[in-house]
Length: 441
Ligand code: GDP
Image (cartoon, rainbow, N blue to C red):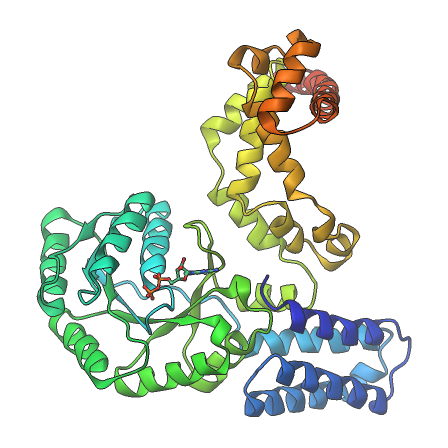
């Protein structure tokens, strides 16, 4: 997960500070030396580190902080605020055009994650009620168009393509298609090269001019650290970049790119990719990111993620089943899938605030156990799922063999399911009373 290494080091420094009733200037200086080292090891640009430590130190050794009742907490607060500021303070949104279609062009090196991001962005816009179209302008790799079509189809976003045609013409054609069929946002997927070269820069400039792009978004691989920052500077000088999307943040244990980009290039990071799946997409919130780095949790992202994947119809159906105690193993299975949609248990735990997240060690949560439970339920017949009470010894043996588990594990699952049902019985009763109460005049 993102920033693990940096997070651990900074949290250690913060822990030392928060445990102290009194702090001297020397204590703060010693802590800042450790912060500096942690940031440099995280591959944050050294000028950015220097400036960051200077700002925090100046604020932290001020009389009010050190003489306060909780000096350690105050220093942590300052570090949090400065980390947030470093990444841009508030979440930056898309610059929508006053008259549709808004044209967004994704640029970047090959492999940065542009194609995947075009589909992720399209899906996200769709969820917000927009009507996006993706233009396939990466014409040099025949496989690129097919790949785009596959991911876009999964996202349910249409693609405008003309095979190996001319990128400028395709972009123009796609814009005309938007006007004709009332798509309000055009996402242009452009070709990437392995290294920055003039032909690539000229091509994106030509597309930019020809279709009047509203926002050039540079897609960068966070795992490349300072190299990503260098790529951003070159693109910005040669083409002009409006904002940045950081991909592969899930694999970036250091965080150097995320922490240096804004300060070095002045461009906001608007979104990030946190995995290969379409749902692994998040708006980039500097404050929440700072909270996550310092182990203060990211409940807000967690809630949003839950909302984005929330299926109201299904929830109502489930609520009714729970209330009337018709919850069966089929529903149990559906709940597993819901958790999976939200990125899995381990990922959910990491977003809990430090205290909680530390209590539940993500590594202890055995996702394999969840897969095992799923496999067991899938090995049952529909009737068995609906009426687990019919499961006798021979059926259990068959299910165990079918799911590659032991009969003991099948029994364990049934026991857990029974426990949940019992719990639901209690809630069901409470729900009934509450409704009656609500029904009173
Ligand atoms: P493009 O050449 O810039 O269009 O890059 P692609 O979209 O083809 O992505 C390159 C590879 O990176 C693919 O294998 C993607 O699945 C993977 N990828 C893209 N975004 C992410 C991300 O946020 N996290 C991870 N782990 N992999 C990603």
